[in-house]
Image (cartoon, rainbow, N blue to C red):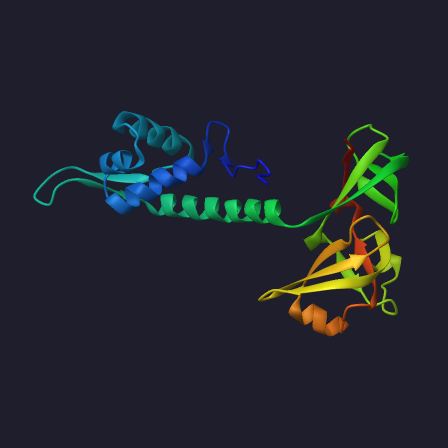
Length: 227
C-alpha cells in the first residue's frame, strides 16, 4: 500500500523534490545539462528554468563551463551534492515511516484532555492524540514506538514518559538480520507488533509463551475516526 508520502525540502519560494534530485544526478552523470535533459525526456529550456528556480532558493547548484579545446559541460557544486544528500536522508526517513508495521485497535473515546483522548479498546484503556471529534476511533500503534519490559522489571511511571501499558504474551518471534519482530497477544483482535534489536531480545531472554509488558507514549499514539 502506498502511504501517499512524498519527500521534499521546502523553502519559502520553492521545494526540492524527487524529480529535482533526478535532474541533478543526471547532470552529474552526463556532465551536461543538455544531455541530462535528453536522458530524462525533458526539454533543455524546461530543465534550465528549473535549475534557475532551485538556485534562487538553494544557492549555486550547477557550475557551467563554456566550450573550448576540451568542450563545454556542467558539474555539480558542493552545495548540490549536499542538497541531494539531505534529500536522500529525508526520503529514507519517509520510507521508513511508511513501511513500519502498525497495529490498529478500535475503540471509543471516553474522556478528553486537550489534544489527548482516553480511548476504551478491547485490550484496555489507551491515551492517544485525537485531533478529530469523532467518538468511535481507531488507535494506531507503530511497531517501532513500542517498548517491551519483563513483568518483574517495569519502571515506575514517574521514571518514564510512556503512559500506556499492556500486559500480554509473546506469540510470535520473527528474526531478521538485525531486528526481531515480536508479536504480543494483548487480548485484541490482532496481536501487537513490536520491533526490537537482537541484543534487546537477548537481554529480555524472551521465547514464545513468555509474559511481557508493552509500553508506549501517548504522544506516539494516534486516534482517528473509525470507518
